[in-house]
Length: 389
Image (cartoon, rainbow, N blue to C red; front, side, top):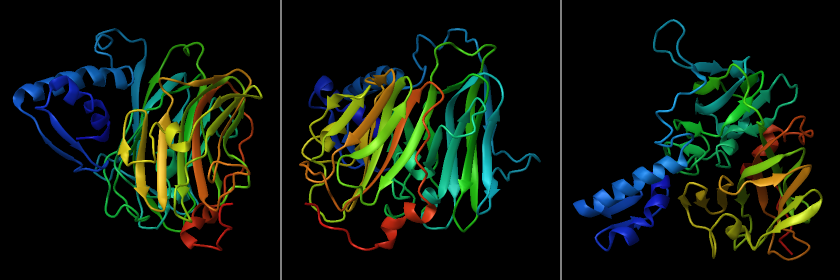
């Protein structure tokens, strides 16, 4: 059973009675121990059938028969000779173009499977996306972090917007490869779209990829552009850690936060803070509360929140604001307090984050992407920082 199903099945026991006994453990390929009599199983199937229609992208059963006013396309790494060498090799320092589309459209799914034996290759490959001929990317994120898991680690993940099919080998092995990463975030564009991956490592990599998209005779109206931005603080300066600062009109749709807990203990008392148009609009009650949990974090994957990585001292958590996008008309700042949740908000922990949002163009300049060596500085176990005040 997938982790997304685990979130959907929690109410099933109540609906189906005591005969449905479900034991939820970790988000892993063999996370389930369950026994269901046939009557309870029918209840589960009926519940999942109804729920699945509400969590996919345009997958309502009512909408499936409707005539659609778009053309469907797929770009892949298929062998152009017709053979079975269905991959693309990417030497160090080079860039691979996954998509170069030049008509109105919308990307609805893309997948990449990176094969490399170089440690930290998921942090050493950078994903970039450009809309309508822009010179600076609207998406610039290391591949592993973009798909909701930090530190170049891989754990099975199933959520509404991101999915990873397996965990190959030991969880904290930064050289593990073989998992397929899938993104289902809709990405509309009015004239063109370009997606690239750059290998900033020292070893070659191999890529099996797929980009599914639609094209339209005319671009749909009132569509904002997808953005994703990576930041890190190793450790951050004193004060709340900044996840996003953007200007324009749009809506925040998600966040991934990865923390290396250098000094043990509980790091997540810090509240999330959202400032809209220069004024505080949201003030939360703790990091675990922001990620829809309480009294700490527990490993598990759900449609709109989850903790795919919880292996001390490493934590990665995500939240998708699909039911509750955070809108802004002119500007947004999204921060989270670090340390013990009290001023001056200091810690010796390492923070890595990705913010996902839509907005009008042009977007504000992104901060400079940290160099490849700095993105993996957690692994070098460099000079110890001062213990949190």
